[in-house]
Length: 100
Image (cartoon, rainbow, N blue to C red; front, top):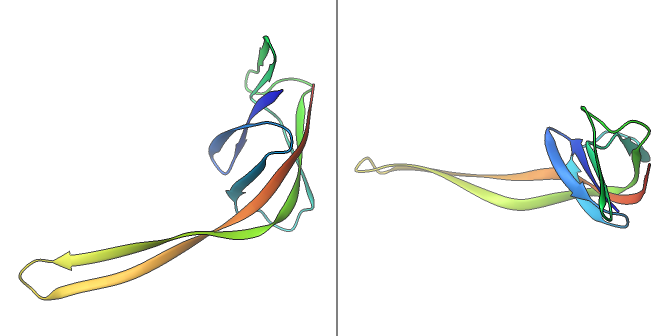
């Protein structure tokens, strides 16, 4: 069984026992999502905008950091360069179950 959920303006195709990195979420232990689409073998349920009576439950594992990005600004022939970095914070989530 699979489902499509939305979180942080992005859509994710999830299945049970999958570990997922989502945008940073506040202090919550369990999450519930209303799926946009549920795939159960050959049967596909598409919602308008969500599937009625279906929900995806997840539990938060912890917070992790993403890969480091290096941003460099450079101006040719001026001897000007500037190097900065960024590391995004994510919430790691484990999908517990998908119920219809």
